[in-house]
Image (tube, rainbow, N blue to C red; front, side):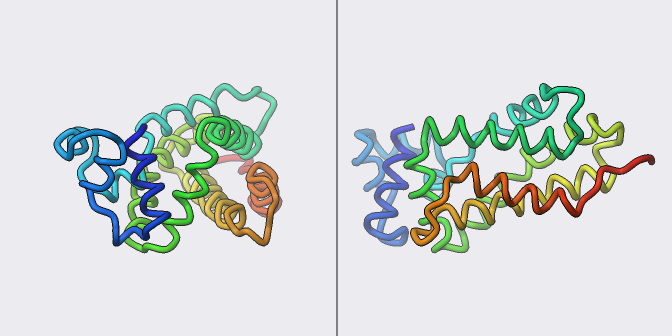
Length: 186
C-alpha cells in the first residue's frame, strides 16, 4: 500500500520522530483524511500489520504433508511465508525493520500485532500434534519460533551479516527444534 510505503520510506530517511501524517499523506498523494481511513496514526502506517497473516499461516501449517511433524510443518509454513513476502516487499521489510528497531514504541506495536498470528499458528500446531490450542506444547513452540524469527530478522538487516533471510530463519529454527522435541502423549 502506498501509504505504508511512504511512511516507512520517510521514517527511514528523516527519522521516525520527524515525520508527520501530513508528510506521509503528501508523499502518497492523498489527503490526511484519506490516511485516517486506513490507519489510526503513523505508528500503524509504519508497522502495517497484515490482518490476513494469521489465517494464511494457519493454512500453510495445515497444508503441509501429513508426514511432517508439527515443528517441521511450522518451519515449512514460515519459510513459505517469508519467501512470498520477500518476493512482494523485501525492500520494505528491510527499511521497516530498521525503523522499528530504533523506536521501542514501534517494536511493542509489532509484537502486539503478531499476537493474532501467533494464536492461529498455535491452533494449527495443536491440530497437527493432536492437542488443544491451549496446551503448552503448541503455545511454547510457536512463541519460540516467533523469537527465532525476530532473531533471524535482526541478523538479516545487519549489514555485516549478508546472509539471506531464508537461510537465517531456517538455521534459527533448526537450532530451536533440535532442543524442543515433539511430545509423545498428553
